[in-house]
Amino acid sequence: MSGSDMYVSLDIGTSTTKVIIAEHTDGKLNVIGVGRAPSDGIRRGTVVDIEKTVEAIRSAVSQAEDMVGVTIQGVVVSMLNYQTNLSRCHGMIAIKNENNEITTDDIQDVIEAAQAIAKPSDREKISFESCVFKVDGVEGISDPTGMFGVRLEVEGTLITGSKSIVHNILRCVERAGLEVTGMVLQPLAAAETCLTKDDKDFGTVLIDIGGGITSVGVFDQGQLVDAFAIPVGGSQITKDISIGLNISLRQAEQIKLEHGYAFSADASENETFEIDVIGSSKALTINQTDLSVIIEARLEEILVMVDDELTNAGLNQLPNGFVLTGGTTVIPGMMEIAEQVFDSRVRIVYPDYIGVRHPSLSTAVGLISHEIEYGQSTEVDEYEETGVREQQQDKVKEPKAEEDKLVNKMKRMFGSLFE
Ligand SMILES: Nc1ncnc2c1ncn2[C@@H]1O[C@H](COP(=O)(O)OP(=O)(O)OP(=O)(O)O)[C@@H](O)[C@H]1O
Ligand SMILES: [Mg+2]
Image 1 (tube, rainbow, N blue to C red):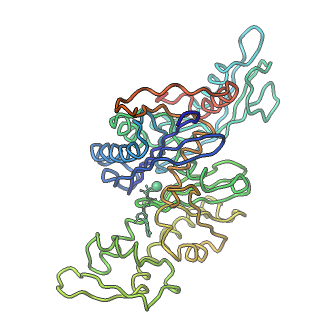
Image 2 (cartoon, protein in one colour; image 1 turned 45 degrees about the horizontal axis):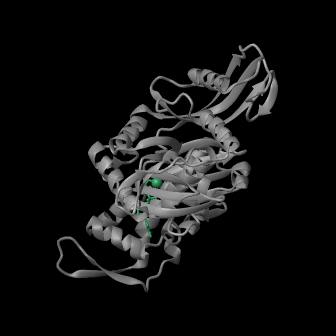
């Protein structure tokens, strides 16, 4: 593992908690460890049981650790896109030092000034995105460090979440014995996997249909311009199947995965399977079309809710169409039903790396890509052949690259309670 940087991500979904360990060598990302555990302590975007959530994190972490032979210390965490708020904000300061050279402290100060106005006391900061500086009225500066100026201004998007959601997630991670090295709103992380620069520039809606929530991020002109969630996902489809066919939740989940189809017009009446109806000793034979009608009804409802929300925000006619990801989008026929509801181009996207080619892992992989771009690698303890775990040496990196990353990271994270 020497000569490469290591990154670890933690995606606490409402159905599964995922951990990914990846190496980044010569610009190439290699996933080397994956861990998954059921998120029994999360319901519809909120932590409802701290102990169970901590247990899920520990379990996913230890699976990934065992695959790689390391002990994880820090993780970059995805923040559930639930009750998220985006506000554009502006800050301004005078440069006080005698030679008028703008320092990283000045950048910190101006970002703080911008956020102080925008953040209500009942909200918690997740990150500060898309920030652009102005020096003495000159616009469009991405990094003013070292420039001469008397007045420094910044504009950016402050992303905040509900205090209880953000604090509870972070508390669980810390209780699991991990340091939070970064925090990224879920759609921003998934976008790193699923959207190209052109997608973000030309107007694309990214929809992650997971277990408990359907999370939406709208990207235009290179920025996240809207983010919201509908508290319904694949678990609700499983419940519908269980109620509709009068079978156990376990069997409902199993037939959904094995025979599910999202677009009933294309489902097969010839694909039949047996179910154990509760209260009956005789197995009942049903076909894929019967099952598909239930799945389609719920998916259509979810997608129509997303469409209504986008219409209300004036964002339903973006030129680049829709990108779907998240575990539920694996159901065949998903693209067809989405195209029908949105009347637009739809793609289903997932990570293109060995070992993680599944839409449920888009966010976890995206967190790693995000940290490679803006954050920092993670320190791990490596198991030695003797069986003794020793602290890995700090990795040697190019000083300039480190400096750039520092400014980027500061832009996003500075002012956070957790730094
Ligand atoms: N092959 C499949 N067919 C149908 N559904 C699937 C398949 N694989 C996974 N799912 C569903 O995907 C859902 C889990 O997806 P995912 O892991 O993206 O959710 P999550 O990240 O835990 O939750 P959320 O994003 O809502 O917080 C479950 O409801 C599961 O049943
Ligand atoms: Mg998810």
